[in-house]
Image (cartoon, rainbow, N blue to C red; front, side):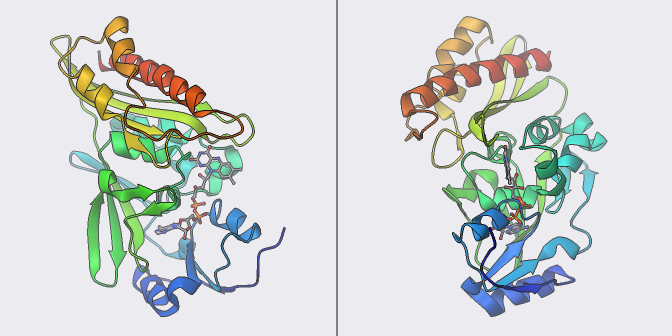
Amino acid sequence: MIPAAFEYLAPATVKEAIGLLQQHGEDAKVLAGGHSLLPIMKFRLAQPKFVIDIGRIPGLDGIKADGDAVTIGALVTHDAVEHSDVLKSKCPLLPETAAVIGDMQVRNRGTIGGALAHADPAADYPGAALALDAQITAAGPKGTRTIKAGDFFVEMLTTALEPSEIITEVRVPVLGKGTGAAYVKHPHPASGYAVVGVAVVLSVSGGKCQRVAIGVNGVAGKAYRASAVEKALAGQSLDEKTVAAAAARAADGVDVQSDLYASSEFRAHLATVYVKRAVLRAAERAK
Ligand SMILES: Cc1cc2nc3c(=O)[nH]c(=O)nc-3n(C[C@H](O)[C@H](O)[C@H](O)COP(=O)(O)OP(=O)(O)OC[C@H]3O[C@@H](n4cnc5c(N)ncnc54)[C@H](O)[C@@H]3O)c2cc1C
């Protein structure tokens, strides 16, 4: 399949890219790894007249430890996240998540900025970004601003980014001692996307759960925090019975999606199973 004709533009700086977005408005689309944009262009679900390739802009592909956080450039590929020693030691949830995205070709080209900006409800990073309280840096005509992951995902394929803004960086916390994290996923057998994906970050002190954050993707129209489960676990010991009772609330207050592969009932059931697994795994790692 061949997409509709478009003009290819390759800015050399973020400022130039923002200028092109301002100039061409709704006729323009940013291109990063192309692994979401090009398929939808081939299906003619998007027909931008201008494709602005940010892939040649220097300085957007680094992973750096920065005090109690790690910053990840928007152009960092899933493969680079998976194999980053900095992330493996300071925020292992992201490498664990990146490792189960699509296949090797997808991981070699797809970028963290593109995955977050695309906001596919079945993508893997959004749940992890929510569980980590990640901060997303967006550069636009008025300068840069930071958007909390909790405010970033607005609805299916829609984020809080303004039309002329570009994600430049994602900031995640260093996960310290006593903190455990886990990402578990039920992949769609054909596409590999998450039917259900659950990211958990929790800390344990004196045998009790202190802080817990659970991000869920695949289940609803956008990734969400399983707040009912978080409330049920706070201050509790993380034994299997307590975790199972809390996990039963994984889809509370959520409009559960349904498709040919998974009915909403089956998906909601999977959510409880995978929330339980992820919490128990994170608790084990927190020891
Ligand atoms: C066969 C296949 C299987 C896949 N399986 C999975 C999977 O299992 N899990 C998963 O999570 N994903 C999966 N993906 C999607 C993949 O992870 C994509 O790489 C990702 O969703 C988009 O990243 P990209 O860099 O390719 O972005 P692009 O396709 O280049 O862009 C995607 C969207 O984001 C915008 N954009 C890109 N970068 C920026 C930026 N820095 N600032 C603002 N806007 C930006 C673009 O304008 C576009 O609207 C799969 C893709 C394919 C083709």
